[in-house]
Length: 527
Image 1: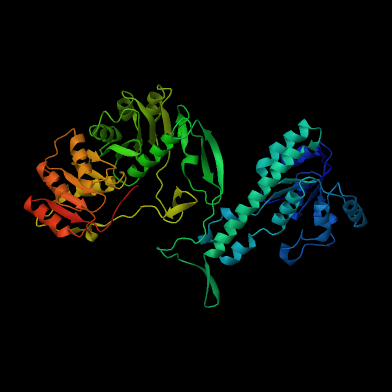
Image 2: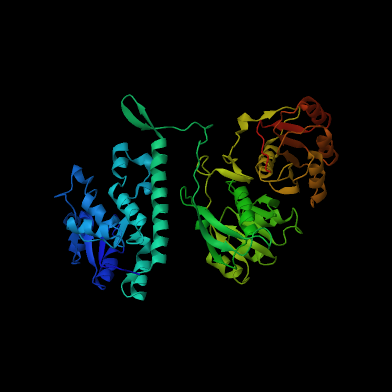
């Protein structure tokens, strides 16, 4: 146990500081504080000493840049209390040993780089605080490092439980957290400096090349929760978020009701969410085993759901359902009649929540619709000994970029269906085929080794008439056989990337059958 007699406080945030300092005083702990912290405590009538009392410096210099970088201050922190020579040396320096160092760093990473000048950002780089924290963490056997205000309660609880002392186990834990904090903090500074360039004697931010991906990518994952198991019961699993590049993702999603989500639930929620995010109109996506089994546009969420369910009612059992608009009472009444694992939407009415909560096990999630940023949302795929990293498939195509390659041209209604099907097929496992009509899926063929088999499965799975529908293919159509399947079933238009060595043969097959065909020039493989 380490008896706490003396604490050094150097904190940016004043949140909870008054309460924390008063709690320390209850244990007769002497407080030394950096100027801003000292002034705050003084204004709250809490007795503390200025850090200069520990220092050989008479005052802070360079406009406050240097106030703690001093031999005496760091000796009081780095002295190993079990080392007699160390204790003799700090006695000669006439300084008392510090037992705890509490640091809350300047919030560099919380600032929007684009709204601040370089000179402002540089002044937000903490030098003294991070040095104090590293010193305390290095010497955790003799000093308690406290890396942020988040640990105030833990410290006070430990002091109460141990009669004013802190156990070694907690000191080691806080040392680890301190080095984690300094690592993440330094990464944000590194990241900012990586975006700078010198031009005409000034310092400016770099506009990143759209084809550039970082040479080095740093991951620091923190476990948010342990999941019951992974994809299968014999696999262990957890939900983690990236401390270095946090985004408003599933960690921040609000689970309103229901049991804990599983590993597979999260995978399917991500798939369903990725589909509805692509649409401005009211959209519903029903996902099972990472593939959509129904997607539709509707006037309301109830309408969109009913239309999506028509695609494959049987497969929808036990699925995940996502919406991009508010779920209301009418929609909730429709949803309550079937078994689903998860309902996901950006918002719900009170009436809808009341209805859906009656299903105690149903997981009800609220998550706002985020637009993906190419370089913040990198896609990682694990392979043995490494990772494959890519930017997300957020490419959108404008109507003017599409090329009609057949004699028949799609009318407006057909063109709308083609765009709808194209957005859906992007989220189906390759090889992927989507058949759609009136902005809802009719049949979906996923994950086959040949494209024509996916087309046949899409036809087979169709519960509604296909005549007059459109077909989307995530990759180019390599042979005319897929076009022939489409023609046999009354498909009137096809959208595909194009680019096959047999494009002319495929176009000819479409012309023979009076099918309109559009080339996008973009592929949407999803492995």
